[in-house]
Length: 216
View (cartoon, rainbow, N blue to C red):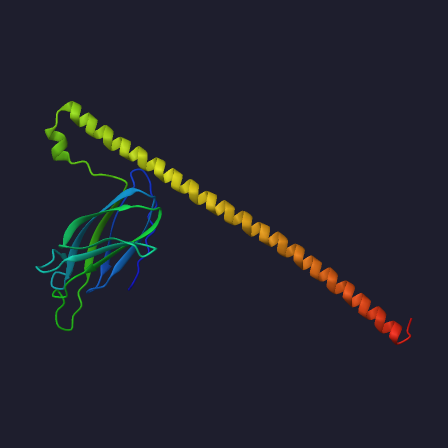
């Protein structure tokens, strides 16, 4: 498995859109650092390389995308086969890095002796529910404002979760630094005691040697 590690820093709004290239049945994986109890959605679209036009085009029939989402503890949060474009969702139950893997399910786009590339457009959204414009327009003004306020409250809650998550990581880093400094201090103290003990032993040994040889 070829892993493409993409560390996506969360901001406001926490969204990242990009594209990547993959070969036939080549798995591409991304690493997303997500706070706990957070909604994550991803929208993708596949394009195929056309050697005649020397450009990417819409895929042919039979091509789909297999999406797998796991944690670093190998807990599977999502494993599903989609079409050439679609949207997947999952919820992070614990904070940390989550692995999102995408792999095409067909090789029919590959000609004999030829390997065409795919371009995968991907948009990852963390802690954000999309606003449906058609529904918003159909609602009256009061409901539309309420809908947007709920969306804003979700974003504020996501910011608070991210702040708590970063605070926890800083606390862990601080404790690790303090433990490391303490271990270094004790090691230096132990080395000093060893050096003093070796010096005393050498002085006593030399004194006994000189006395034995009647040099003193």
